[in-house]
Image 1: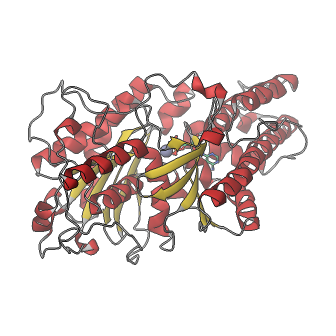
Image 2: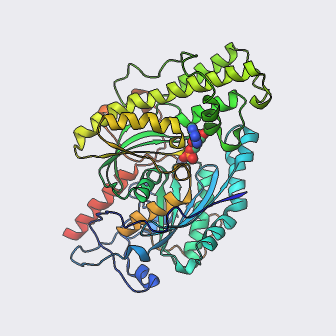
Image 3: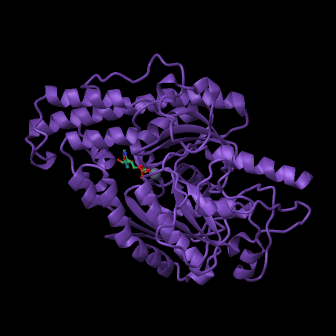
Length: 474
Ligand code: KG4
Ligand code: ZN
């Protein structure tokens, strides 16, 4: 089923961006696009070469600051494609932040059937709907591919099989219509979509990004430049919500998080005394594996028949399940609160002028999460920025918007060839950190799991910028 969202806001004023480099304005979109010269895109490979991956073709060319080009934000229109996990999403967004269309096809039935995301089935589901989702996004925007300035697509992190479907589609559209392409980091997109909804949100700011696979807290210095203050040493909070929902026999068709949130409203959040994870770790890292085990043991101890769906449970059984849901949610969020408090103190030492903390990713659509974190953030004299729930969970708008942000400053790849062979090896980054780890926040528990991790987005952009500076000097 294809879900459609209405335009969020007809006009959102131009953001307070400071790209440093201005790009050419021209009366026609197509001309405007042709005048743009690629600098290096977030997807461009520096020290992580692959054979036949498209990014290796990127030229590193300079955009002289002396050329006082001006950007016509309203004229830019970007198509964003997202397939990193279980949602097939596409959206068209204008440079001024206007959302022209948003389409999502979710794999809710598969999720309920397999009790989680099954990569092969998810890939097949993406392949079945991707053409229709993209076409719908263009139709609803009343545009054709010829009206686009660029195509943005998530290239990581995520499931390789799923990422491939989106990247292949993006490259086919870009190749056929001679459009530049921007490879987008999924977690950066979760953070930056907040700048589309809150026009006061300028760098530097903090972001807590909480989803099914990620639990990171970063300091965003500027576009593409992030310091990772903390991450999870095992599972992310969304995974803990999903497993709790599954073990409590809840309806997974809207994913586990909303089901737990809803049932928790009926329960007593102090009835089961779960331990708050990592109490003695004086860092900003997270851990949810132990809490998951505590939940499983609590369910077993209460003799809950998990094979019986909650909708058919007795009153007492339902009450037991609600108590566990509420107690789990309270402690899971308390863990976020404690780590966020410390992270804000660290961040204010590094960047004393930060004013905002973004909370985004699927779990940020939870009302309890939002209100508890709002208290923490306000106590530290910062302002919480949470995108609306439809922009917190995976969507194409965040990809289009992040693509726009990088495109504006000249970070994109040139159009791919019109025809690419079926066995073309795409540049996909299933494990791709967003920022460089803050030394004080490093965790021994995670250091064993760094094999086959792509260099971070921040390090790639930093390397590209310094290469560019050297080229200018020569
Ligand atoms: O960002 P997202 O849509 O996809 C990933 O990148 O993983 O996040 C999905 C996660 C799932 O674990 C889902 O259960 C969780 O976000 N989620 C929620 C809520 N809505 C979605 N968790 C708690 N409360 C919610 N209301
Ligand atoms: Zn996500």
